[in-house]
Structures are given as structure tokens and as C-alpha cells.
Image 1: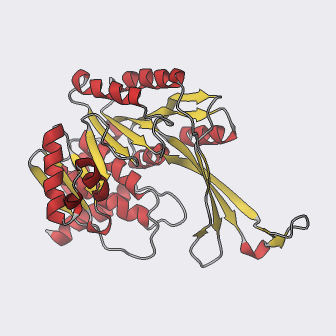
Image 2: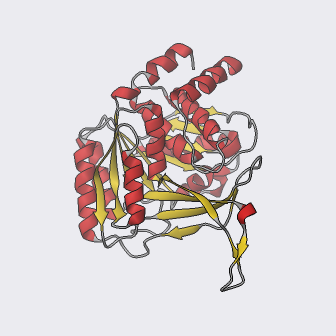
Image 3: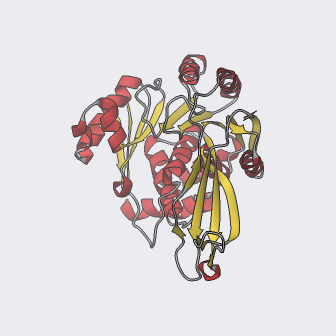
Length: 345
């Protein structure tokens, strides 16, 4: 990607309006100082003393974090939170980011705020060590009243947006924001807004999703097509991505960890290798940085290859940020995406 093209694409970000619909979580980090370890008088068990608490948006909120870091002008949040302390922290963290609107964040007293509580051992001159996570989730189906409000919000923001990112973070179907009803509503957006970029990502797989842009890993691609051989080699991934893109008439992006990303749009297919590792890594949040950067770049009229190059650069920045779900700024991308082009041209 030339410096001129990078500037042309990145300069459009401030004028973009992107909606993020899905499962918004609270990432709560508990930093533990092992030097302050104690033993409980009551139980005789070790006590981990927390010396610092950090809270930041996770799940779909990580996508929002990355869009804000890119300087996207307006970011619409479409999701649900509980009427609890974690929900308050989540909303406060979202509102603190530039350009973010929480007008369509549904507050639901009957739901818990999806929370990842992450205890970290933090010592000077050492990498953080994450202990067993404590998760709070909803295990019952999302009430129809909440689904209806989310569908109404999606329809409202879609008509005003340049792109929609849909992220499903829950493991159990129908317990989060991305319900069957919402997917059906999303399907109608293609006809109502044919120029709208829609990119979907789900940890449960995209088999039951409508024809929108798909972002997945190679195992998810093979599972969706019902062909284990689709992930056997780089060439088989390329062929499978093209097949799926032609079937859906939408772009397909397949992440391959250290091998990079394969993207297809109809018969067009590109592969961009991952950048070299520059030290210790933490892969948490890397996938969401890819999703955010792909959607922003496509909405800013980047080519397929340019969008993937920017996503590769963003993920390289994020994996080198330890003990947090990181983000990549425009300056970060300029340094890596442009240098990448110059060294591989």
C-alpha cells in the first residue's frame, strides 16, 4: 500500500458512520500484587490482593475501541446491558470514547451485563500472567421485548451508516443480541440499502447467517462448507473462500493466524501474510481489530487487498500489547502498512 493510497483511505475515516451491533461485554482486569499476598484467617486459603482495577469494553466493545482508535467520526452502539454495576461501567467506558453514541444501548433489568473478570498477576519487569477468568453471562433466551428494541435500533442506524458490523460473542444460541429475529432483519438490509457494507463475525459460526460479508477463521470456513479439506492448505482456503463469496455475492475474509489473511470477493482472491513477531505476544482482541479495520477500510473505498493489509497491520500492533485488549491507531497503521508494502514490493 503506497503512502498516497494510505492517506486517501485513512482521510475518509473521520467522515464515516459505522454501527456495531452485537454482544457488548465488560472486560474487568484485577491487577494482583503477589508481594502483598496474605493468608485468610477465616479459611486458611491464600488471599490475592488487588491493587488496581481496570474496566474497558469487550466483545463488540473491542470492535468499538478499534474504530475509535482509527478516528471514525460516528460509531453507533446497538446492544444490551444489565441494570447493574457492570453495566454502568460498560456504558461509562463506551461514552468516554470519541465519536461513540450509546443512544441504542438497551438497558435491561432482567439481564446481567456480560462480563469477563480477568485476574492478572502483575510484577515489575515481568509480563502479566492471567489467572482463571470469572465470567458472568446470560443462559436464558433473550426476551422478545429486548429483541424487538434491538431490531428497531438496527433498522434506524442502518439507514444512516456507511457500514454495519455484527458480532456474536455468546456461546449459546439466542442468549445474546444476535438472535434469529435480528438476523432476519439484517437480511432485509441488503435489499433496502444495497451500498451498505455489512460484516458479520460469530464465534458460533456463520452457517445460519444471511448473505453478508463474512469474517471467520479457517476451521469455521471448513465447518460452514462441511468440508474439512477446505482448510488443508493455503490454496484450498483460497478456493473455498472464492466458492463461498460467489455463493453469497459478498466478500469473505479468512484469518489464518501466523499465515495471515485470505480474502475473496467473487472470483477475486488475495492473500496477505502476517507480519513478523517482534517480541512477546497476547492474541486477545486481535480478531476484533481485524474486523474493525476491514469494515472501516471497505467503507472508505479501499480495495480488497488494501483492506486486508490494514487489518494485518492492526492485528500485528494489537498482539504486541500485553495484558489488555489492545487497539491500533492511524499512526500505528501508517508505520506498519506502508513499510510492509515497501519491503514486499
